[in-house]
Image (cartoon, rainbow, N blue to C red; front, top):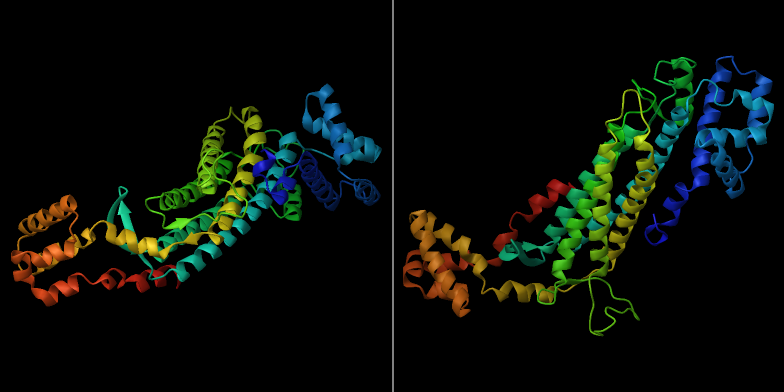
Length: 435
């Protein structure tokens, strides 16, 4: 992933050097398991421990890549470079293993660590959304369906809905992390030809991973597909919130604005512009995560016990998707912290459609008075369409209509046109979500 969208802590996880460190963690865990099983002598194990503390840095990485130019095999190149540093005792390293034992088990470590960072960023976002929901509870604004004014809601309820969605994403992420927090040390086709289930269990326990109960040469890729699809769903939530904010920042709406720093510029041609660039940026990046999820699903169907068609895909999507997910969540939290809410424009927009949102309240009141629904609907629609055309205030037009006013009376119409009615169950919804 390009540096522009990479936060340092996540970028550091996916460097070439850190990948080799993860491979070394796995190789050493296997050695320790063999030592526990009595296969690697105490003295040899001590020598392995002492000689594998060398720095896995750019110099070591460059040597691995140099060897790979000749071997055309990255794991063999890695083992050769390790052997150069460790010496003859390295004959015990990689004992009984196939390359995917190391790579897939290291993947389990790296994906679990990446998932933890994503989870932490998601927790920060949840905290920001919760605060927004509580701060703006009861703040009336226009609810829209099909982009058209519908009925009032509150800005707090909008944010509460996003909080609830991202809480679901958090639950799914935890499940997906648990699903990929596995390894396998079962050999070339999963039959433990030169390994044992006990060695596998011991090594994976040392690494903090679970044993994949039935592996072939690899961990099956439905686990990975689930993980990357979870990230894509979460990115869909990010985009949904960003689309909301982009609409609210439109000139004719302007109920909210992204923070605009001193010295910031919106357009090279138009000095007045303040554009929703962060929300637009995140809407675009969400598309990449969805595309990568599809690539992860394409990796499920491999030949027999394994082919290598998944490998090139994962070299791209494993770092890119986790880096992007981490970046998106962090940037969204920052956007929301600095979001400017404009209550006076919310109030203006509530009135801009002649308060036609009361139409359902009038319809319901007429039905409750004993009128047939379709007759009541036509009565209300007639006045509503007139208000649209002549830009008349809907409550005033209803009060002036003798048929409706005569049937409902002034006191009932006062109840019908009470704005507080729309928030009467707000507390119930907040309690459901926040407890």
